[in-house]
Image 1 (cartoon, rainbow, N blue to C red):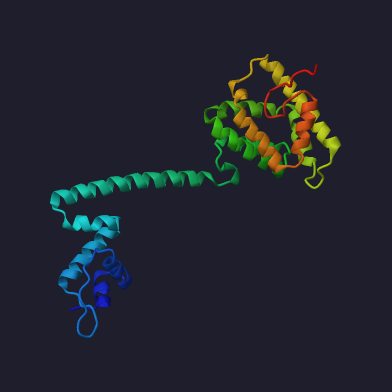
Image 2 (cartoon, rainbow, N blue to C red):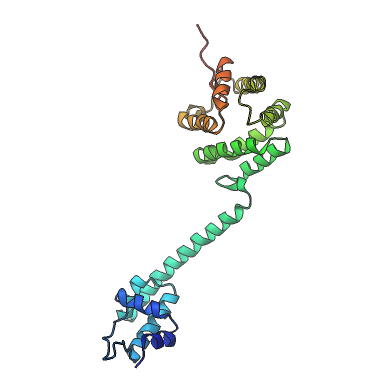
Length: 258
């Protein structure tokens, strides 16, 4: 008769695993002999090898007991169910691997390739990493809200980067030091450029405002993100309102003062 250590070694498992199988009722626990040791017979060895085989094959421990007691037909059905589950798990893991492989750069986190390419262009025109990081977070909000419009929007944004005023905007924003929230002249210049670009876009739209412009939640979140990320954003909002625009994230004029 075998001790628990001998049983475990014969079946290719650990004594700890045997004790766990006892605790969950998967392997019957024998009575102790006169010397206080548990002794296992051949039946226990066979049972433990079956348990080990099923566990190594990926069968959940919670199902092994039923499978050991099943007839041939029920056993085959259980195997098919487990195989189907494993196939689904493999597909899920393969999808996760593909997603992880795409995250070779921080920019790719939660963003489609079109936006990642756009962020790369911002760096090429001289935008600082601080500005790129702000754009990245903003586009995460946009991509989550309008995933089907990203390709179209990115084509437009890339075209805007051919405009010298847009390039100037990103460069001025990048030049404003984070340590100087009171750089009023730079903020005024940024507001002037933004207002001019909004005016161009508004005229091009000829009053036909995209339905996205009516999505207050998304634009409110974009404005809130700017305010939470940079203390100067509140001042920028004031400057844009002074120029007749409701911020810079939406193509919306403020009512004319009476």
